[in-house]
Length: 385
Image (cartoon, rainbow, N blue to C red; front, side, top):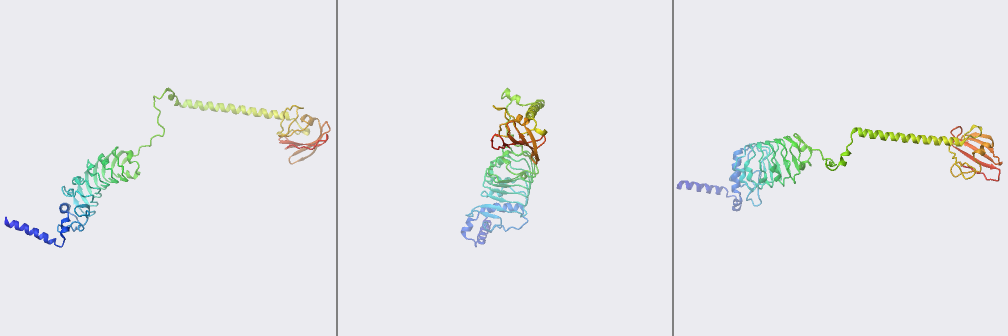
């Protein structure tokens, strides 16, 4: 008994002596229980790369991949990416690091189910377990990690469905569950208001994408059987019981065809009536215009109007003379010449008034008459055109 006591006493003195280079304050600040938890963990996962973890060396500021709090009383971050860690994460190891807020064990060869030992890490904010060989279903209850902002479980072999409890991660900004074997649909009530990055690609998910996640690009859901529902119609459907008048708004094809034929028939009749009207009007003008001497017809633009005195003709707008078409027909006339713009006649009226009449355009396509009073009656020369 005394020999055993002496042995342990000597061992304790030896340990204290080996730490003689450290100040008493540093020894007291070293997170002793977190150190034991880390040693238990690393002993079970057997890293292929050499670590400088040593019980005799202080944890804070010395151990690779370990970060301590400001007062060096607790381990707050563990980062061992690509260190060749193998096997499952044992229980009662990392779960004892209750102040841990960052855990990164990515790119290793860890196996087994999702580590249940992490359920006690309520302060965890960043969890990176991607690129391992973890399998089985995801935890049913994610509410224990309400402080999570980054969750990356991609490139593993997780299966089963996505638990709806992920909605409890209201601070989650990045979620990556890609390249697993997850199946089923995305929970329709999944609400992640702080989510900025999402990747669910390359799984076996199916069904409609929830409305709350449709703000993310289609690449976030590729490699699945997921689909975006079509947008709702901009016009709301009319209720069937809204009134008898609504029932008549739906016309059959025969009714529509009848309406079209009726409209076309009415349009044809109106067009025919207008055509007859204009033809009659044009014919009346031709009859009223008469013929000029020498077979030349009066111009098409001459307007025959009944005035209050002597049925005078008015040629062109705003022009009038003291003679009409009958006076011209009774007058003696002679051809003065033909020019580019028509034939000119000299006509002597019964009252000895001499005028020059020019039929513009010539032939049957005349466009107007220019009449000039050149003598007789003391009248001044006038021209209308």
